[in-house]
Length: 441
Ligand code: PMP
Image 1: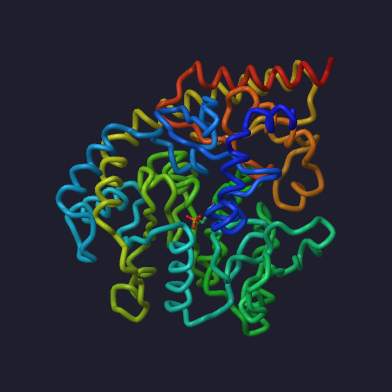
Image 2: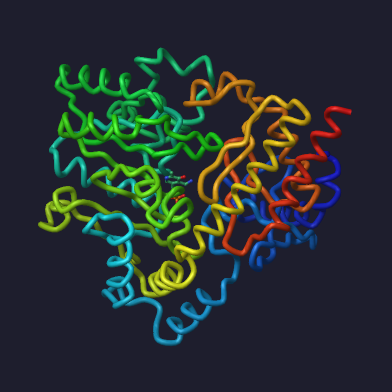
């Protein structure tokens, strides 16, 4: 399978050789790397993408979940074109930002909003707001969760199994070089889906005079495939953070616009103090947002915390976001996505049972995956202990060789777009079945 993929991506190989001259590692971002070379894309339309070799694929990667509206959506294109002809950037507020703020407040039930240019900026600013509000420095995060590339959250992700540490005292480790130890020491990881362990850690930190400013977490982990919250877990976290006077941040950069109109907050009915958005928000333009309660955003409002950026709320992105929210990601769009996800998950589950594969299909909203593991994955520890790397890798190669564009690596999930239909999700299931047939024959 690997040889087949290499054979059909020879122009990507040439592009990679050319790119290596002036792009570090031949790519624009380390997450775009892949051995032996990355696949360079040329264009996308609706649910499809084409690579530089002319291979046509259904897109299930969708820009790490940013393109839930599909590629080159006409409504977003029209909004961008119109905005382009009347000026794209002033670093002054425009009406579209007001409209987007109103719509996000309605969807999340959180009254106050600000904008950024990425998920990383959103989580970085949210953590600063929490620190500024509480006057504390320590933060708690979920072990294994990714919240962006700033120092404070590049901690305890991508860790090897034998380095994870004791469940009640998980290791605080930098992800790569260049992250100051002083910053790492301020970030305390706790396991997902274990509210008891979170509370015990918070109590210990408080006793040590290091009470945390915030807990930052995804309501469903989206970088181990999909790991859903166990019933009652999010309510327990909400209760613990409230009782201890700690700000709860839901990082909805991935879940935000992809699983329900009001994201995980709406889906599971637990409202955090602060929420961070990006990815699918901007309709394919780099827009992030932070929303919060009056109390949590008071420090921004009174100016004690600076939440700033030249491109914050830039008119081009705001026009795209407005069209995306009001014209594309409508309630009907989420119904369509839920229906398609049901179909693909049911289809994959049937293949798993028929062929007796070690795994299960899991998803929510537009997101899902087949998790290759003999037992249920509930957190990073169980993921590292049980996930079958070889099967995950093979599934990716089967997809890429049969017209399904998927995220490289084993940690991501598919994201469906509003332009996908029964035929596109059936194609995914057929490729999965082809792999199962070959494996079991
Ligand atoms: N938070 C989460 C949950 C994410 O998945 C990501 C990106 N994968 C980020 C934050 C960072 O977003 P960005 O890459 O836009 O900086």
